[in-house]
Structure formats: structure tokens, C-alpha cells
Image 1 (cartoon, one colour):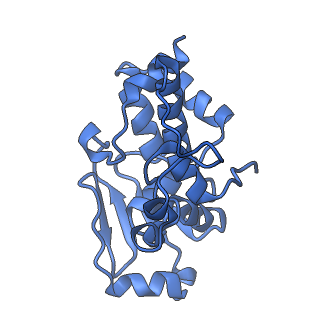
Image 2 (tube, one colour; image 1 turned 45 degrees about the vertical axis):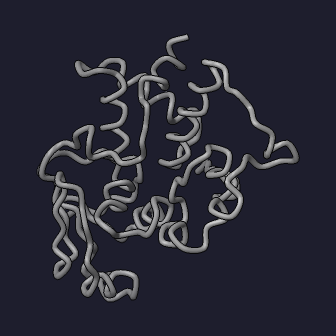
Length: 205
């Protein structure tokens, strides 16, 4: 499976904001706090982006935050254009409803990358059936749970004593390590400061 192998901190510096690609470490030992400039020898030089540049950077920021390559992200956009909702909102909803993102929102991974590994390794079930596809689209009413045989793993056992805050469209029972999709995510549930209209403008050129 293709994946982005660029250093996480460089991706954040390139986009000029924290993408939280390393989970808790981004809140403590973060190189972006020490050097919040674009990587490279000309990183400290001020640069005024063109309209196209702003659109490109917004698209890249969202793509990197959700851990996707360009081809896959473009396919999400094309699906969003066929939605009855506004294209930008439909795109964000589909990204939020990916199983790896839902696992991250439920606290089953410190970052989306770690949550994706949890899914890839077959640690989760959806409605009682094992699903190991990170891009699997969950639906309202779906129940996401850690397999009983995996609940003794340290990364999951420690969650039973943790305080996990989930968005209002999800609920999570730390005792049974089971989460449920209560509703579709709303625009104000997405906390990355995304300007989705720029992404739509980028692909509409």
C-alpha cells in the first residue's frame, strides 16, 4: 500500500501549522514550535502566495492531515462533487467517516497514523465483523469495537483508565472499548481550521 514517507514534522512546517501527525508528542516535543518556518535554505524568507498557491497549500494541508496520497484524495473530491450537499462539506464528512479517522477520534490511536495501523492489523470490528481497511466508510449506527482477543494489549488496556473526549457525533465506552456513530459529523465538529472552499476552487480550475 502506498504511503507518504516524508518526515512528519517537515510536513507540518511546510503547511505552516500543526497537523498532529505524531499525537501527544506534537503537544510537547514539537519541532514546529522551535522552528515554524518552511523547510529548506530559503524557509525563513517571507513569501506571498498567489491565489493558486493558497488553494494548493490548503489542499495539501488537508490531504496530509488525513494521511492520503494525491490520487486517493482526488477520488474523494470527485465523489463529493456528486453529493447533494455542498462539495466542500461532503468532502470533509467523507474524510471524517473513514474508519481510521473514527478510530483516532475514539482515542484508539494517538494519531491518525497510529489509528491506521490499528485498523490495518485487524484489531477492530465494525458491527461484530473484522474490518482492516482504513478507508472503510462508517455509517450512523455502526458500532466500532476492539476485538476481545486484543483488549489485553497495553495500548488498549491503558484506555480503560484514561479520560477520552470524543466529538458529539461519537460515543465511546472505555470499559468495553466500544464506540458508536451517533450521527453524521457537522462542520463545527472538524477542528483543523480548514477552508474547504479553497480546495474546491483548486480542483475546479
